[in-house]
Structure formats: C-alpha cells, structure tokens
Image (cartoon, rainbow, N blue to C red; front, side, top):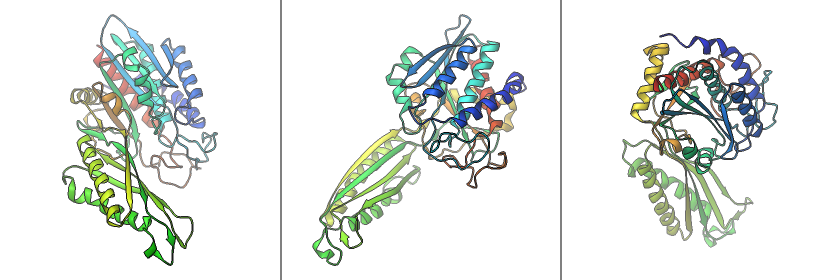
Length: 394
C-alpha cells in the first residue's frame, strides 16, 4: 500500500504553516498564541476543540461512526530560551526564543494528520489530538493530566513522535524497550568554613570537598550499578567563591542522572546521598543532596509498537523501519505511558543538509541555535499518525 497521497498533496501547504510557527516561538506554558492558532485550524476543519487544559493545552476531538475505541495523538508546542543563529526568512522573530527542538514540526505534523482524518473520516471511533505545552522542563504533561486530561478524554492508547537527527534521514525509528531515558536533576550543597587563601589549614575547604565528591560519584557508574544497566551521571555546574584569595564557606554541585529503569534511579539517589555525606564528613564539612525526578523513562508498549511498525510497512515498506537504540535525553511523554499503553517513535530528520542557504554555522543537533526542522519529515509523521489511527479504528 503506497504512502497516503492526500497527505503528500497537502505537505507543501503545511510546510508553510510550520515555518510560521517557527517564526513565532513561545516558551513553556506561555504558548498562548500558538494554542490559539492551533484551535483556529482545528475548528476550521470541523473538529471539536477544548482549550486551556494544563494552562495552554489544546485537545481536538474527532468522532466518526458508532465505534467505541479511542486513540490519542500527541504533539508538544513549546520552544526554548535560545537565540537563533539562522538567517533564513522564517527565523524566529521572538529574540531569545526559538524552536531549537523541532516542536514547530511536531505541531504541524499532527495538524496535517488532523486535516486528513477530518476530510476522509476513514475510521470508526474517536481520535483525540493533544497539543501539549511545557515539554521543555515545564511539566506540561503533568499539568494536563492533573487538569483531568485522561478522565475528560479517555483513550485506549497514546501515540507520539519526535524528529531525531541521529536517526537515519526519513526512517521511522522505534523499539519495544525504553526509547528515552529518565531525566533527574541533582544539587549537592556543601557547607565548610572559610579562611584566607594563604592559610587553608584554618578552613574547612568546601571547594576541595566538592572536587572529592565529584570524583567519588562516578564510582556509582563504574563500581556500584550493574554494567548491563546503562546510566549517565553528569556534573554540569559547580558554584563557589567570590575572590581568588578567599576560601569560601560553601559550594554547590549541580548535574543530571539519566537511566532507563526507575530502580537504577533509586540506586543512584541512595548512593549519591551516602557518598556526599561521608566524603564531606571525612574533611570536616557537611553535604546535603537534593535529588529531583523530572521524567521517567519513555517505555513503549509492545502491541502499540506492533501497530506503528505495521503502519510503516504498509506506507513505505520494511526498509523505512529503523531499529532504534535508546537515547539518553528525556521526554515527558513518559507521563502518559505510565498511565496508559502507548508508543513513541522517531522520524529521522537528517544532518542539516536539507536547509537553505543562510543558516547558522552550528551542527544540526537538537537544542542548537542553528537547528531547523526538516519539512520532508512532515508527511511521514502525519502519515504514520493517520494510518495507525485508521487501522486501529477500523
């Protein structure tokens, strides 16, 4: 069965829509104009619209026939606090904010699927189009769930996707294990005693103590957890001191822990607390760990993955399927999967060679000031959304 011709026909129109979203990005939980525009499109296609869910979330509901099955399709809407380096015509007009993660493409891909399904109505049941705010650290999924999303709009399973530069271009990447890691942040506050830099023996040096703690924490990765359990512990910031010749009273360590299993996360939290306290104690200081779990791992449901793979084979053939390795970044789509079966897939967006002249000099990586969504991904994402929906709601 060929790719969906109507979606391919609409793709250029929606590429222009995508670039409009790129021009006008909004930060997490501030997507008011974005949400308004989405609602306008959905209403114009005869789709029932609900707004203001989880702050700025939008839900479109499309019913057809007498079927009782329901599927939820989700896209995120927010941009990042990044100044865009690109100089093409659709570069961000909101200084200091840009769609550096391709959420402009996610919005548009789901809108394209919605337009097609509203036109053709080749299904029997209910499809829900969920446009979620605040994925970039704004806890948007949690806000929508707390606002009654899953009770007001119940679904049998959730389907979401993300563009992904590291996945081969125009391939659909998915697996039956963890697609993305948990996201956890930590802070370790060390309290010592300051002194003149020339007389460190009179101090309890929090900087020296912090260095020893940083070294010791990596022992969790290499000596405490099982080698077969992937995990990352990255120390990304250390704050201490105000002058070159003063040993300060305090120091703080900041970083992230990524795992594919909540039990492994438990292990890290337990041992990070112990190591920090005991190392600090050895040098006469104290240390307090604050460990915050932001996102769980994105773990797909096997039968939902089967549905995605079936749709991709029908649309594009076996060669378009990519056996996706798990990746260490996180996604709050995990919050839906903890409560409902579902699947999350990647669409390979390429290395940046698709972009027109005038873009910035940086690599084509997510969260990079030179990033731009590859419009060739739009019909692929929309077609997979649509075909899974049609197959499930036969």
